[in-house]
Length: 213
Image (cartoon, rainbow, N blue to C red; front, side, top):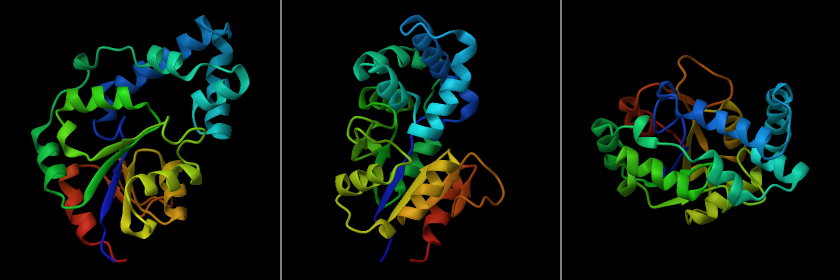
């Protein structure tokens, strides 16, 4: 069967990592953990790494260990001036719009942040919906139940009909095991945890057209 749906990650995928936005978000995560939870600065990096490995995101780890309120956390870490970091790219918009498949955002951020990012990039009209951290609660990428929820949300019955584009190899690896055709964004050369590799969005239409189910 042909590819009918494409899931796009948001941060560091729809815009380049060189923007510096994700670093600012991580700094806000660290500040929340220190100011709101009283965690020592020198403990935070290793703690966040452990939560990422064990729970998929810092947020899920903090929910489990500290009963953190999701809305308060997300509001704090995403309270950033997006227009200072993100700018529309007409080429990227044209490429995404020209793809005939259904297109969805699939992110471990929340929907409000996703909407703000899409507005800043002038991509709001390119996607049919957003699968965010709240829609997949209590799961997140790269957990299999999160993929199941995204599949249902897109109205798909078969993972093999879908492409997943993400900048994290842990997500593309899990997505491929689930049945998605996975594309690792921002990397060059072969990688064992993805089916394809994307450095420039100009190459995306060709990659998708060459997928053989």
